[in-house]
Image 1 (cartoon, rainbow, N blue to C red):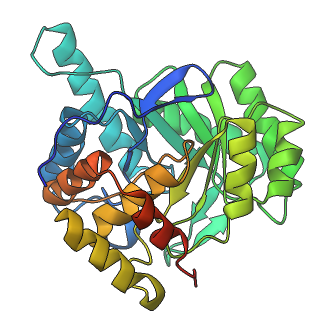
Image 2 (image 1 turned 30 degrees about the vertical axis):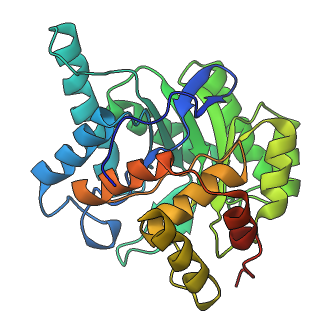
Length: 299
């Protein structure tokens, strides 16, 4: 299946005012090994971003901890160059890309991911993200993970203050429970939730349902995890054969059809894989195929 611009009818309005195509791109892999340092081939990483936008992707997800800082800065450079080209009238340039970033995780020298939700830290990180992304306002800024050593409400109030200051347009949460989502909603409008979810892992179904009820975007991280799990592989492979599609493409198509609020963000450092992922947005699964995929017993 070849890549082509994403379907105009498959849109979701983040926060009610930012329409994006529902299949986005996750920029975590545009870094070095173990998500630390610069990519081995920076020119290739930049080309992946450019090609994503050329394919119609207009929603890109990153985080301050990817690199750290590497992914954000690379996106800022590439998208900034495209915006400059658009001003110069270069055909195909597009600056209308919604960029989501995150704060709330530190990276140790060993590469561990350490929750850090203290308000002062979060306020500092948004300044760093604004600088790296080379923007005056971040479209969507997400609290990366609740910090057990900081009251959850204190962290959310920090994000609300960023929004009030005009530093961010919309607030998102990541790795939260239904109870934490509800607590945050009492403080501020929540535009998105990003939790682990895929065809073989649906532990966060209750959070997805809460997002559906509130018309909140649900960003399933790890959308391609689990396609080789014993419970899922055979079913996915058979459906893939029927569509001349890969297991990854079927997994993405299932996510898009499973709920109208899902915003999958498959990540890759390969243009070839990127194009295959984009092509998945044009797959149409039959009702019987969706029933088979829905009935997979998640592990």
